[in-house]
Length: 266
Image (cartoon, rainbow, N blue to C red; front, side):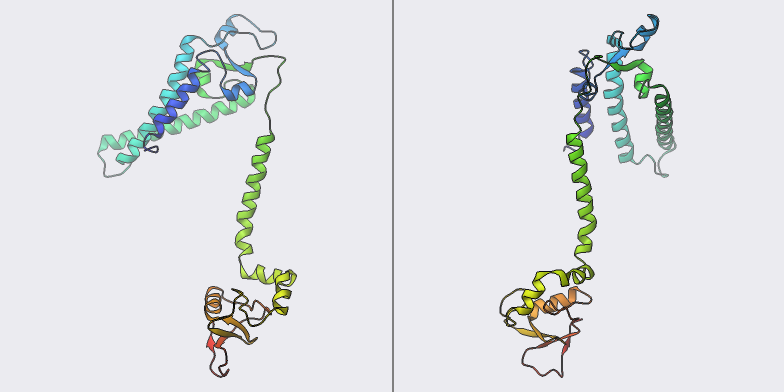
């Protein structure tokens, strides 16, 4: 149900942010952290050159309403139109001609908007004014709210998130390698388990550490295992090595049975 009404929920949250920030001449939470506010650039241009860049009135009522219509209503209508066209399969070649033309028109409008947004981004990087098309159309410019207030941005949380993100990506990269038999065999000489197993009781299975109910021998080293433990390891690993001596296991046979008829562990 949440996925079905996701555009409505997003529009409602955007409306709440607009209602308690832009409408009452307050910055949004993100803009407030950056010590910024909206200024009506049209009124500032008519008054002449400003001294510090902080002067100028806020947005007018018409600008606030159009800002809400563009950010809340426009995004909601576009999201619903895209989901409706995708559900109705307007892009299929079997559709009627006007439906197909409507789909092509939507794609061209989207492409034109993205191109215009990219052009506005290049202009913003050069001039520092109007970060998006809505602000440029409404002539709503972001300026400093207070000249003596530092930007209250704490990067501690961001740095912590970056560290945990990189650490999790490193674990996702290393875990498949640690589970591979080649890495385990490489690290086995440095582990303490091998020395303990070699000096331990040979009557217990080195995998499950209990006395084997159906004892089988790993060939050629002839160490005792449970049948299930040895059989599953040989079937799971292409070149399984003995857990006690690290020798490759090429076959297996039942305990107290002559070695003339071993069963292959492959």
